[in-house]
Image 1 (cartoon, rainbow, N blue to C red):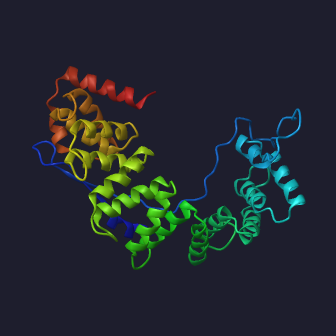
Image 2 (tube, one colour):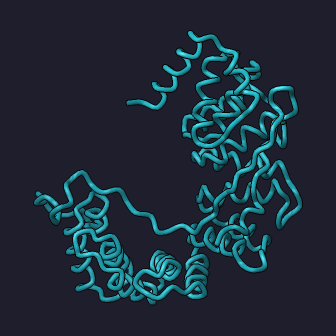
Image 3 (cartoon, rainbow, N blue to C red):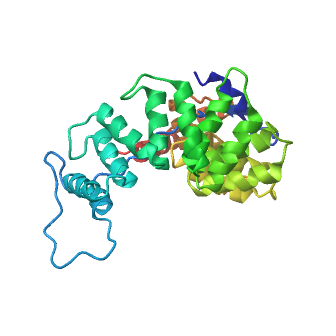
Length: 335
């Protein structure tokens, strides 16, 4: 379904050098995002959890329902949300919370149908999170028939209310349509990125870098790529490293590029592992270290990223050096 998005593939090319010249591409893998699922509390979830008995009066305006939800006391969250609705039958936030509890099966028996029912009640009262959740449900066919047109309509309503991830999803859908609309994608990605969506910041950077939907603008590409990299989007870290190595839209700095490659390599990115290995063999931007370079090379090769030039370096090692490399790889992989 997402193969059309491959037009946004990034050309990851370091400046030519005897050892460093080789081209790779990656697919941003743009996919619509689902509603966030909060981490479970520390309490076991095999039984409904309730808040401990409170000592003293509640603070004025305290949101007991959402507070319980955040802390993992899901049964209490359900009960407090129900109490709120008993007092105010138009409380959209309480409806959305109940919907999410049904969606995730927290404190109640999981039911996508019940979740959709409560989301619709909240959406009718203008809750943007409920509108977004309905769009996600329609896109995945959870609790309702799969309906991309309905999903788009709900995302549009949520986006109109400032929902950042709804904007991101609309951007993805603009790229996945029969006729790709890069300008629409650019606009939605920008609004999503400005709203704090890191994946949108990366996607926006790609469009600026490739000149899709906008004139090519490397300065803007670096700006948004940096924003995404700072939020630990691995693909952005790799691309920013390459732009920094080449001096594309940013001051050329091989040492900083090497640091970025290492950061991404430690996040198990094979391209970053390969690039770092090349730099370590050549001693560019980082101290020359053939042993560690071969460790990264083997890690990258193990997940399908071969490199003939690095294989030649590996074959030239002594038996003792090979043993050191293998020991290092085992340490990287762990027990």
